[in-house]
Length: 216
Ligand code: UDP
Image (cartoon, rainbow, N blue to C red; front, side, top):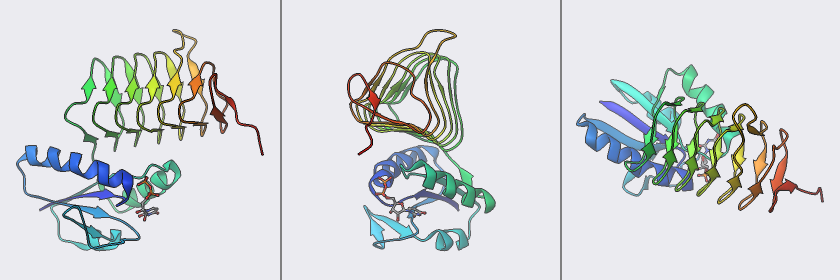
């Protein structure tokens, strides 16, 4: 039996599991699809069992596949390391209406939600989350553990480093060939921000045009 799990039984996981179910239905193999959570609040969510990670791992299986559906990228990385050390494989969750054009490379464990568009010549790292209606335009380079909330507009020639979070509806201005707009590692882009220039690492920017947030 192929055992498949969505790690995280909260908002993100509940949006992702039905996409995985659709993929598995098309696969025609016998499978079992559950939520895994370290704090299972109930036994069943939307008709699927909720197990602790240890319970899930101990079940007999021909193979075990997981997708980490938790928006917080630091938690995501920690759980990925745990799964790697247990030999669990990652799988990509991709809505059936995702548009992907030419020469797009994506690392393990991504989540591509409904209405996501990836155009051409794009590189994306591990465990990327693109929530509903987000897009990535041509020649972008996206690092590991990057998270897009719904409706992110990532235009052409933008580099986004590891662990960046981009809030809902943010617009990032396109860079130029050889002169990308860079969002530095660990930066946080507030919802609705209009980012017109590069953002230093570990900086929160908000507003239009986006500026570093004043410290209170
Ligand atoms: N969680 C977990 N292990 C961890 C951290 C979080 O199982 O080490 C679970 C947590 O119990 C919760 C979910 O991940 O059910 C995160 O839910 P939250 O609403 O915070 O985030 P979202 O679903 O929006 O990403």
